[in-house]
Image (cartoon, rainbow over all chains, first blue to last red; front, top):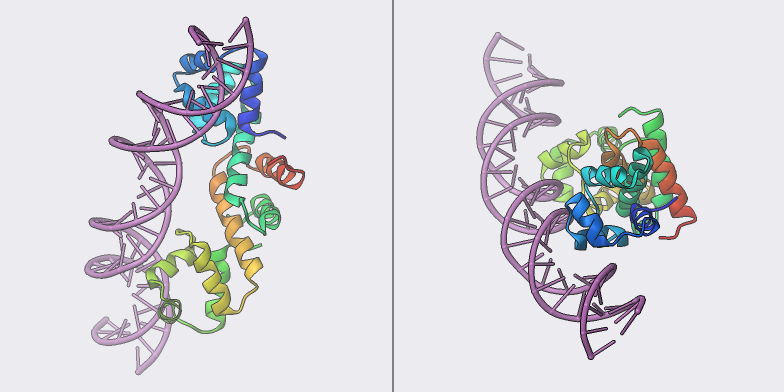
Length: 97
Length: 97
DNA sequence: TTTGATTTGACAAATATAGACAAATTACTT
DNA sequence: AAGTAATTTGTCTATATTTGTCAAATCAAA
């Protein structure tokens, strides 16, 4: 149950890599990766996939973490966050969308 | 388990009002309200509250519907939508946010 | 202190979203 | 069917949000 940022930071650490190295491997500015890790910038889906490949992580899991970041972001500071999640779940499951 | 749009459309119908009338009461362009009803524009929170007041609806319920619209929007077309919802729920409940 | 790593802040460019209006379509009414 | 009213759609501009980049600041280790 982790955020995208925490996952990629711990993976990077696990492999003993510096931001600089990940940055050059993925061709993404290292300041940006720092922000991803801290959660103050949201990566694109393509970037998420790059990270999954590079760190050899399960793509679905990483995308799930990233999506949950986005959900949490849209619900930030909302009283009705939990209810909204339940409603969304129902609507998607038995959905008339 | 309804979308914001369906709720306000059915309320409007229930009261026998035309878009024009709702538009002038809320001071919102009627084309915009039409789009809200059809779900192809997302209202601001202030607008949602205006609708709740005008139609005498429970504000929390309407906001919940609107939030769930936004969640569904961010999950559209994603394989991992349901998992992401579950993860988000856990993270918010027992959250390290 | 010096060096290297990470984080932060600020900016310009790109992208997305909002509201307004006119035109087109659809639905009633006679 | 014609005429009128209601709704929907498309487009445009303005505004806001988000993005990647760079330089500077902070932090960490030696």
